[in-house]
Image (cartoon, rainbow, N blue to C red; front, side):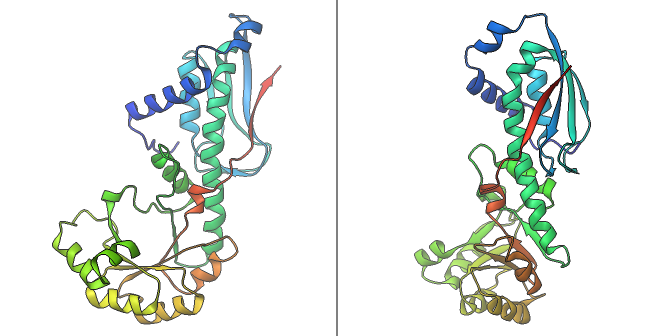
Length: 284
């Protein structure tokens, strides 16, 4: 199983919040209908082809509700499996497993949805040297988990937080007057911790030229046409890192990668990925 992106206390609090939100003061239906000493066996099964992400959290949800549950991992995070595949087998107390079911599935379905969509994007550019990047477009509170899921799908993580890197965007430039002034100010600040160098968002080729001349390490080429991207690659490839972004879809990412840019960042892999269909089937 892949590394856990959360510290132990972060994971404990995340699971507590998930169960508090779902269970409240108790699972009334289960407590009313299921004998306290009844055991059951179940299997998590995917109804569609997926890339798995979040299995470790689903297991921790189950263990939190039933520490004595016996769990067998059949397929772990990062694996691509077909519809009908068993992911996990569980035997434990029926009341406790029924209470854990929805929270465990919600987490696994959401994170696997991100990993699955990410893998689809990665496949469209795997014939090139271009790498897919995620963004900070995530559900609040899910940042580490969403970016973990995108890694499971094959993307590279971009900035985790604002303190990870300097990215000068149009609003920064508008307030200080021009790109050179923004770069000069950034270079005068302590930016050694920047994981992406000194990056400047450019909407035009003129802005790209200004940013390179002023000392940018990386250009974020935002919503540029394929012709503009090809021009930027011809002029600056190898001189600065080139990242394309803006409205990238599964239909367009291949053509964008073919221009020769180094990176393509896609917000929708974490912002708009649909949850996948995974069920918990109870066995006789």
